[in-house]
Image (cartoon, rainbow, N blue to C red; front, side, top):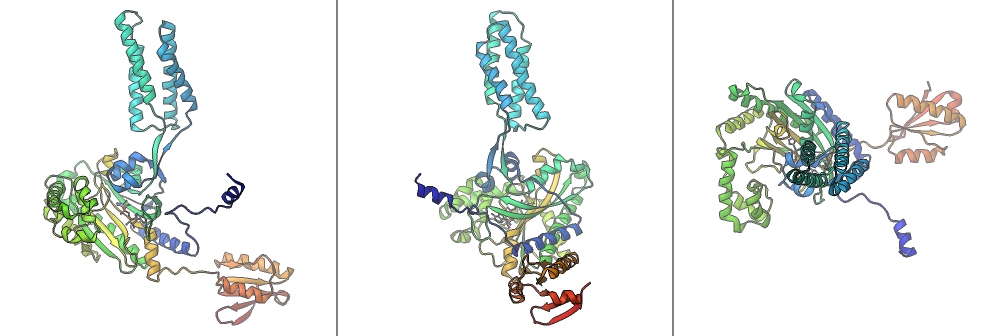
Length: 534
Ligand code: HAM
């Protein structure tokens, strides 16, 4: 590298990575206000906050969100999390070296000794939580243990058959040793629902009074093409209601369906109350039911949709053509102008729902009406994550361009079970906070209050001591105060106060100190008042 290039490198300016950004004051005040409103509104509906890890096992997301979805197949930030396994590797290497040379009884004993050392070290680390193995690695470990036991119980005799068996088992052990991978693939979370379900199972929340109502907020990560309202690190405010199914629930299916519909409507009511409280205008709620995964319901519909799509395949774009095979429902999501007229002719899911899903959907609509929640039905609302069933919904807001969904959600009965928990129902939503903030700013509701309440303009040593006391008192009373660190001429100080958007200037000079007075200037009017300092 030439000197000039090296210098240039040195001076290189770092920038936030594409699709990520800094949120700066005063805008962060608006973020805080939005989040504070969520805390308050959700608490009035009985929700508790859950704080989740930012990364989880990749397998959690691929299982929950679906391996074929865009999110999992191309948008996750994943990496291999390598634990410190040098000690294990050393023992493994010894076993590897001994394996192929086992001939005598003593060599056999030494091989078995180091192998048992290796297995027990792995188990100790696992028990201490220092090592996490993927499910594949766990089954590889158990295969290794089985072969080890088989080898241990093999008689000492040197007959040809036993010898062959011993050789075979040793080779199997060496292969199993190579297969065993420590560490695991982890991903930055692309969404929160999977983690909430994982936490529900991990903390035995089915033992709590049901349903369990939780909310979470924070950054999510998806490697999407950045544009207005679409980022690679974005923020969600997420809420979920989980309810483990009672063993006798099936006895009164109609009652259960009606109860689920009430929960769905209340979740949506809470969401709309929140949007109302933060001052979001022109939000539109779209709802749909995508039924459940059975031949007489969604599966039957998807088959019909697929054959309808096959007939118009030539007129569809490449993405939709591909989706006919991978996920025909997603064709309904298409925003391609040229496909809209064709999609309008496709069969509607509402005409193919089973009786239970139909009853549930009708009840959700009734419950929304009862709560005065306005909605529009959108039969094309299928959502891009695999776990949904029955109710799906989305809220759009004006002023956002093509990325106009500020919230998406739906019901996901069965997801907890899919992740290894008990049969559990679930419904929830996630608000895209970045988009909500943008929409508030576009509608003029996002003005964050800038500036300080009071700027203290002081001159002289004695005045400075009084200024420190005044700043302390005012801050204790909840005012935001700017106390300049160096003395300034009053003219300059007032100019500075103006620039900072201060409402008042507290003037403290020699006169004020000797008379024990405060001079307070209202900066917008220039009015000035003297008062006795406390
Ligand atoms: P989602 O529709 O993938 O659903 O995301 C919810 C919301 O997050 C979207 O409506 C949008 O406002 C925002 N969002 C998504 N991706 C981005 C991005 N790249 N940039 C900015 N904002 C984005 C879920 O995530 C589900 N977990 C929702 C849910 C909760 N369903 C049930 N419970």
